[in-house]
Length: 451
View 1 (cartoon, helix red, strand yellow):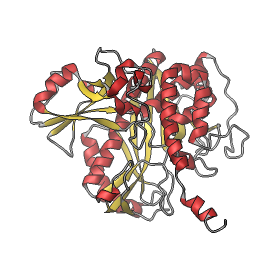
View 2: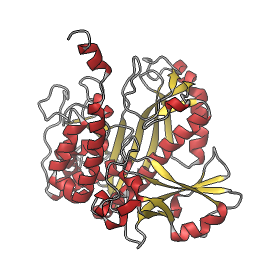
View 3: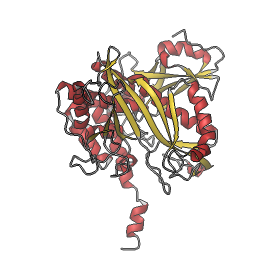
View 4: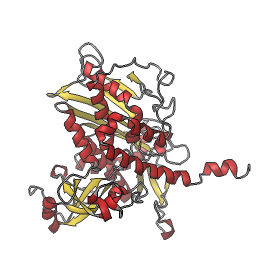
């Protein structure tokens, strides 16, 4: 830990990814950093008990802190323990370092709700196989017209900014549309490259002010770390230059298109792709792994699409999936097999995810689903040539349905831990309860004059 290059820095941000995949933490003066690297940084355990509005869902001052864990009772402190391999200097704040942490109790025992640790455990159970993935991330970037920072705009959550488009959309991959977003892309490219993220491509997406950036192949934990750093960096850099970047799946704006997060995944053994077959599109282990992804797809939705808004994306004939099928090189299928006999790049693309997902939980759900398929040697059903017409189980239509599927999935409950699944579902159900208590514009328009 003493090898970190702290010369010239004034502060270091210690961060951890919370249950939503949002980075939280503390910034320490440089004089405090050596001790913090050794002994950890205290943060209140209630950070783990909050929904997306930052409201505390569990009764922290009751026995066990509302989650049955004495170390979290009374809003007790937990420790952020830094992983020095994640250290970066933030290019947009060049006198500031940043390091990613995992959570432990004061006695050194791991906090069971630390999502980065959950993924590390899944990767350990996969050994001697190694998990690799590439990330395709769609998101929106707008110019801020009014940041809404008056006192009346405060709240849980506060008033979002008013925005203007950078492009009017519907000209997918056209060069002149790309040129309209290029000034911002150049800013992002410069800052993201300085973070050593493996940038591959920068694309103008189909919708208005919609962008896609892809990252190269990374091992599992590094890929999840890259995703949380990527999202946080994009939002911070954009805001400093007068833009609002959002990874919300489907913003409530006219003519908007949904954003997805496509996860390319493969396994390797001794440096060789374990999905490659010399005679078929997938090896036998690859077929069983794919069958496992299908078997647990509905339950894994709760982790790959963890917001109420994300389920607005599952629409037929939309380049987004709506049912549990796989296809060979078919972008309408939930799971798309890419490659072929002897192709070292053979992989499975899961098109289920939204870009707001916690990457540690999303990746862990894939590993445990695939492992179950391989352990039970699940048979692979036929490929769906017409994925929006093939008879198959539908994806959950709501977050409520997805949480029910997760609660009922014995494999994922056991793998993630029943304590964690119950905790996670309760947080998401608190969000749903708040949503259900709001009177929507649709209700007002539908009933106010009619009745």
